[in-house]
Amino acid sequence: MLTIRNEQMLVFRRNLEHEFIERLADRLEIVFPDRAAALGRAAVEKQAGSAYSRARSYGLNSKSDVIRFVDVDFVVGADFENAPDMKWALLMLQDDDLSPANKIFRLTRRLQLRGIGIYPDKKEGTTSAR
Image (cartoon, rainbow, N blue to C red; front, top):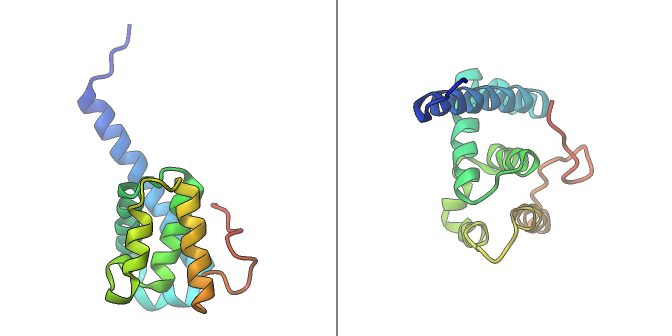
């Protein structure tokens, strides 16, 4: 019988997260090529990793919710929810009464109402992962 120790599972999980962050960075380079090129690959990966960690801390666990959060972070700005004019976003993301999908929907909708479109060439929120 094969036994996988907790330490092995942790290494496995870290590897999967690292691969997912690399795929997020690949996707950012495809969806937002000008911004990604201006930042460079290392900065894109760093921002994707930071946004991924923050998304998870807000209870966003589904692939689609994490992708949308990473997209918002990339377009609006790194650590956007902590900017003085974005405190409403932080409160929304921390609201345990909202489902993860509702948090992302409300976040992107409110940004739209403020004139900030995340996907200017597409219908809002229809992105997909590679």
